[in-house]
Amino acid sequence: MSTLDNKTKRYSTFAVIFYINKNKVKKNGLCPVMGRISVNAEIAQFSAKIDVNPTLWDAKDYRLKGKSREAVQANRELNKLTDSIEKYHSELLQQQSNVTAELVKNMLLGIGRKKDNLLSLFAEHNEEYAQKVGVNRTRETYKHYLLVYNHVRQFLQSQYKMEDIPLKQLNYSFIEQFDFYLRVEQHHSPNTIGGYTILLKKIICRAINQGTLLRDPFADYRPEQPPKKCRHMTTDELERFMATPITSKSLRHTRDMFVFSTFTGISYIDLCNLSLSNISKAGNGTMWIHFKRQKTGSECHIRLLDIPKQIIEKYKPERKSDKIFNMVGYSSLAANLKKVAKQCGIERNITYHMSRHNFGTLITLSQGVPLETVSRMMGHLGIKTTQLYAKLTNQKINENMKLLSNNMADKFNIYEDKQMPVKVCAAKSFKHLKK
Image (cartoon, rainbow, N blue to C red; front, side, top):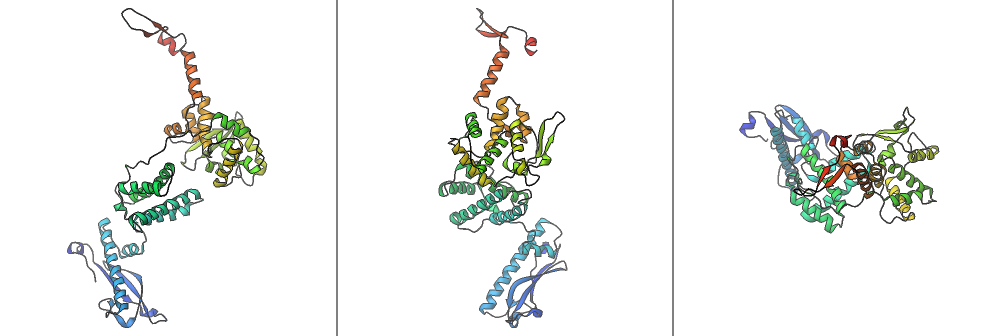
């Protein structure tokens, strides 16, 4: 029997005993060992998952008699179980005032028990994520989580010689070494490493939310990033992409979907979800798309231009459901984009996400659409995100400065005074300028 110190006794009584179930003797003559947890006269029973020879069982000591190999091994397992149960009971007492035998049993069986190790918590997350795939999560992202899990597991085995690591042992050095491992040993690019560490930090957030960690041990970590490249196509590239003759039907479909997203700013996953219910016609005859982005849940309201309307009509006869387009998988789409780009004489890598950057830069901002309007159409939660997408072109800057030059003409003159240096003086009143 196991008891706690006198201070704990004032609050509860606690005991763990084992017995054999003689009513379930197996064909080999062995009996299963059962456990009983007692807290304040409440009892919870469980299987110890050990079978023993009933003639060796000591009902007073709750253990096997003798020093045979079978007895020593079984008693060692029972002692481990007792230690674990006492540990879980102590932890529960520290967390809450009302502790029951059933709660201790559930902790022992892993029901409702918080995961204390990194990989066990990661695995729990992935199991839950897998159940949401097809509902509000994508299979591609699920695969990325599995990939990062395997990288962390291999890193622990090679660098720490461990199968798992307690969450409370994680520190800044761990993430630095993991970064080095991915960069040097696995030869991953900075962008890939950044993506992997973002997913790893989501597991750390889960540990913080469940109370295992009080703070993020990786809070100061910033992955090294390469210089930002132009994320949108040039006007010349887009014109070639749209005008080059393509004979393959599947490649034409891929190009049309990319062009549709270029002129609407709709992401791949939202285009897959786009249905007839998302399209409406306003009183003035204009066509609109209204939907909530899967990524952020924010609302998007986009007026359809002529080109996307033509693409919708083009694929109307091929519809198999209420979905606007019959979309292919992302990997197939990405492979097709490379082929289209090659046929169009575009040397750099074209990704589907570039279509959103095209919309934010070439189609909207460069044509004078205000940043706030672009942000609403793209479904961004803030202007800062739109600023990352919508990189201003030199052509737009030139047009803005030309407009400014015309507005400022004849409104300021330069004069020289003997006592004062050359300066700007308003030729007309500021009231007139404001008009």
